[in-house]
Length: 167
Image 1 (cartoon, rainbow, N blue to C red):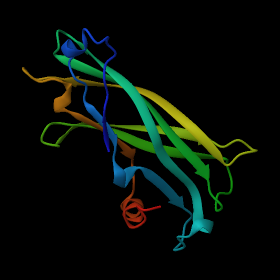
Image 2 (image 1 turned 30 degrees about the vertical axis):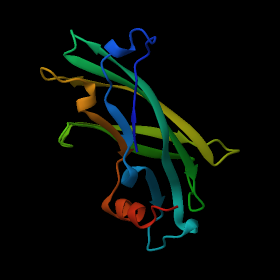
Image 3 (image 1 turned 90 degrees about the vertical axis):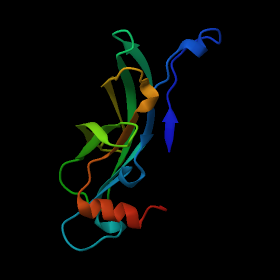
Image 4 (image 1 turned 30 degrees about the horizontal axis):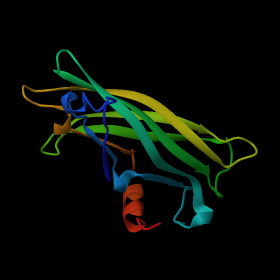
């Protein structure tokens, strides 16, 4: 699930480059399904379906190794569902959390992308570029931390994801 980002360096200096934090997508929050009002929960009731499709990034240290900056490019796909009517857009809320070595959340930031669906397509790719700044304690490096990406979900949406994880 987690991917270790690496800094660019040639083979001669690779051993001296400090490690980056691990970055991953939170499995339970990797999909966002928005249903229309009511009890229906099949494909005809979906207004939009979004997924964290991936990420890329890098890190670098500043302040004499006291801070690591993680630059991320997050890719999200969003589809307009069969139950969507009205405006051709959806708000796509997601978060980025920073966890310490004990897996405690030390910072969390919310973001929202707007999926404007073209008239001739029900699917769109969204990209966001963000920077996360992690202050380091004495003797720590970036690999003492983890950065997780996921959608901001309601309790019902989280339960839906957990019940339908295999899809």
